[in-house]
Length: 294
Image 1 (spheres, rainbow, N blue to C red):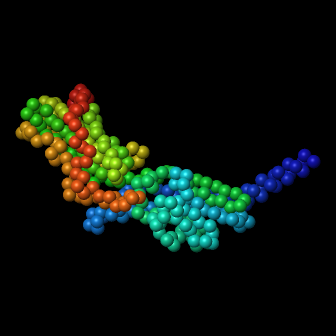
Image 2: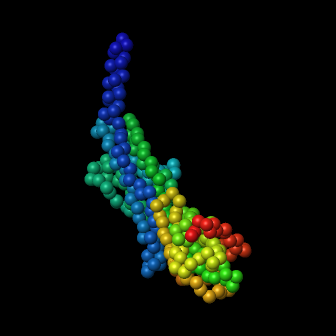
Image 3: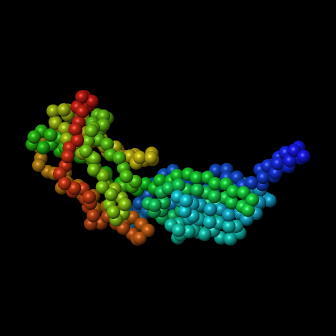
């Protein structure tokens, strides 16, 4: 009796293996950088693609393909019906987008258009039948590149060189670092998040005695997005200059570029928001370890 029970169990396992759903791989971009068309109302040009490659045995039935974002259902396809975009994906996918001629795989992928900041997160593809199911996940990060990225310096009448780097309208929260001769300075950093559009303005400041700086010293500022490979750099060369009383904040505006960002509640722009969040009181200057510089 025990022998027949073992044989029956093995046959059941083989039957389950031959008829199960299996996701081979999913395609989810790790980073989507929001590109803007400055000549056409500065609206985002982006779209990105999701795909879920799977195998389903011909004996399986009741096929359902689902895409979830952070555990929430955003797309569902039950062959032979048309697919349905749900929640924040509604009206933000290409209709009739297909990736395969197989009637059981035709609408497994998605072409996502007009992405929002909250499209960042964990994307999961779930493939189910009445008999079995499989699921795979991958993370995607939306990045809004800086509208302006500036690096400048000035010398005051006390012989101190003020160095400042600023980036505007960035997402997610960035990291800024100042470097002299490719050695990072200990500097004061202010990062401000705008409550209307969830974009960040960031600035990093250092103050150094000009006696520690030689002409043609290289100064650069590095902008990175933690958790991504996104990186930008501004670089300038220091030359001794006449002192000035000009305050950095007087020239800390974003310029005439108007960024339009579509959100769940409408289209927001940064017009008339120049310098938002940057005038937050007295500057406190970071300390510099000069022994590390030269």
